[in-house]
Length: 182
Length: 186
Image 1 (cartoon, chains in turn blue, red):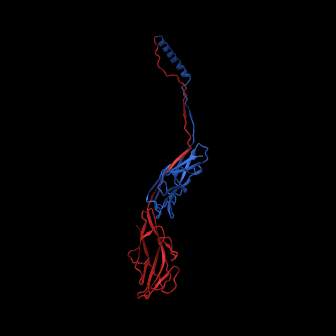
Image 2: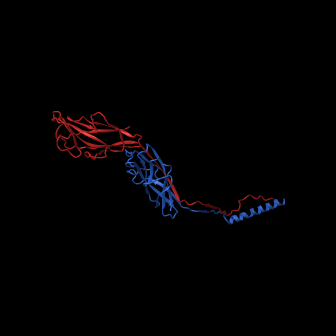
Image 3: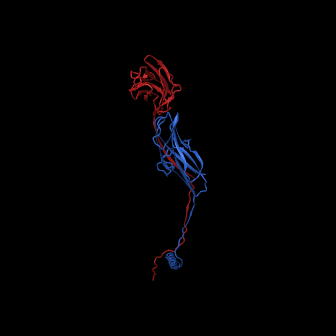
């Protein structure tokens, strides 16, 4: 067939050409890639250097962004059973609290500082108020600090105030923190 | 003659591959602290100085002292001590003090107060709280007292006028008695 012969001829020609070319130009290949570098920020909780002393309980899973804090057993008339918990009792309520450090790190950014906000995940029972640095928390994010330096541990004090009339119960709360680059 | 042409490698070519990594910049970071407190109920008892009575050694504490000072049937008494009766065979001196029972998280609305002596009174000497003469067995002082407020109580000492060794207490020697109070939630 004429067409087949033409194809065969072309193919043969290509085969005849290629060895010569191969000898003069070694096989090469190029891989060219593009990447867009972006900034990123991370937040971790870590024990305060005073951990173990009054007011500074050790965190569970310190160094991570998801930690636990055990505030022990307490009542209006009996102080907390954990020495590391700071316990204050007044005429109408008592407060237990503990401090830890927050470390926020940012890379590839000109941001000079960050703001920190906090919220509680679920509404507290009546007569119970979770606080951060003395500021009452709600289920909406509340700004705690507006210009914290990166990398430096910033001490935060988490507490809970319980009114005298609150019945005995387990008080559990997930406190969410949000760091936003300025 | 047909030439067998072996299949050889293809021509080398330049290959241009573009790989792009596009990601939005991250400006926020989050973390969570799970906090737990076991909130208990409880009551506690403290003694407070009554403004009309003898000043307590430590007001507001669960353990304190009350000093009657020098007492006698006819001599001067210290501030806050009163003499209510002088009879032929005994006299009575007394003072006021407060008890406050604090509660938190309890469903109880009142408490019962009892008291007893830690040891028998010295000879010729007896004491009573709110008119209830105390012994080493527990005696009820109040059946339903209010929490979180000072409740006034009267402590009276009844002393025999008999001579020491003849039924009267020792002279010029401190007479010390410990009273134990218990508050029980109703």
